[in-house]
Picture 1 (cartoon, rainbow, N blue to C red):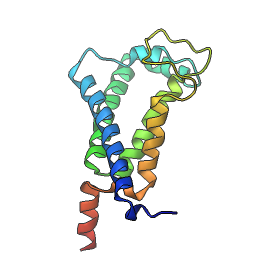
Picture 2 (picture 1 turned 60 degrees about the vertical axis):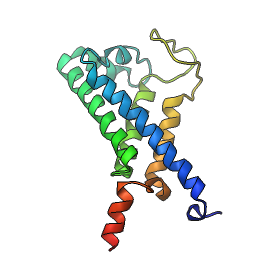
Picture 3 (picture 1 turned 180 degrees about the vertical axis):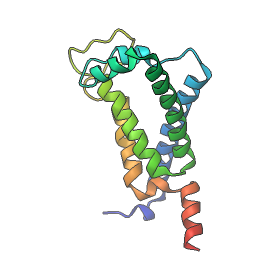
Picture 4 (picture 1 turned 30 degrees about the vertical axis):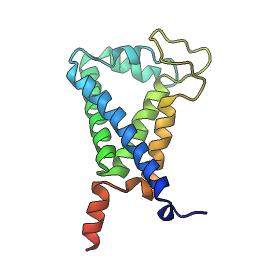
Length: 160
């Protein structure tokens, strides 16, 4: 097996992927923050699988829905910044994996689960949400994913 330390281009691609996914999540969070009329209500109303009861409970209580919307917005922002800056990367990656898997379980791309909201493509089992979740799991467990950012500076400082 080739050591990642000997392959700087591999590390560079991993860092680029971390940055791009971080940007995507940060932008999604900022969009929600800057559009006060945004709500997760439509997404939750579409839930048809194992978490549909949980989604219905959230929708049925406006206070809970407001809390979920705030947690979703600020969670996306924090996870995105963590990935972009490589600050608390492992925590951000695990949190992002959990959040995206929650999205996936709410509205998976399975046969027979038609959705009223428009989708950006045609998926069967695998969609971008699942792919990003697995990539973030890689960031959480793979040491090279923490390169070139604040985590690496903090670790160097601790060693000195």
